[in-house]
Length: 342
Image (tube, rainbow, N blue to C red):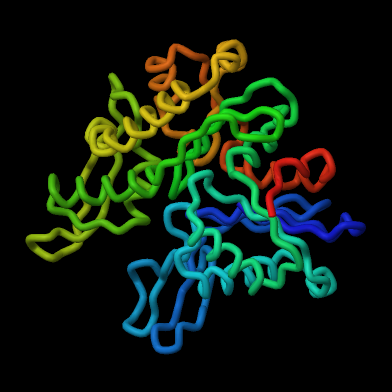
């Protein structure tokens, strides 16, 4: 998650959720003006960025020898600084007219709680190259909690599980800080790769990442269903080499992503085991809140409830929790200054 603002000019405040899978840009007074995949089409010969977002994602698996569609963020952090910078510049250009871009903004970047110093340097480099005047960092779970209206600046404990594309962030939050947390590089992307492997092994069908993502959305489940859903999946048959369409059901996809789902649930349990006893009352009363795209996986709240015996709920519009959090911080910067780090 990333957002930028300029003090004294509320109309120029801009918030950006820079995620592994999708980037959302929020402009004060206009709402979310950009919601596109975090993908860039790069020319191999000179590494120049030719397209970003949805246009670039359509090129995944379809580019020629001189073009490459890549995702500059991997595992929740910037893996390709140059491409990430160019992608960020283009998204901001789409969202803001020229007169808004001229002042150098201060920048706040949401980072996974388990980020390394090398990854921090990559974030810092991209932010400076994008024209930031000042850089701050904030933990992603805190931004998500603010986005759903949790009182992160009070002594009341809040537990947020933010399941994105590259990472799953679990945090117990109070008084603007994370009391206990767990961050794992297992989330939506790992489930997609598990589906690609399943299709290859069980059906001799080669499918791309985009097809695997659509299959996860259509058939993914954390708990096996009594009446499995069925959908057609298309790819290239490994034996004949020809395009082929086969039927898959939610039972086999649920089994394919079972290991990733169990890893997420185990991380939630570990975070609870590390929590102070004083938080027990708050968590029992308030429960666990799921945010991020992974929160939409059918059966996941029920599975976490079975393992923890705690109330579990999915936030309203979990895909936009982080960007709504940036908007809330921009509206009351002084109140939330304690969650920002230089």
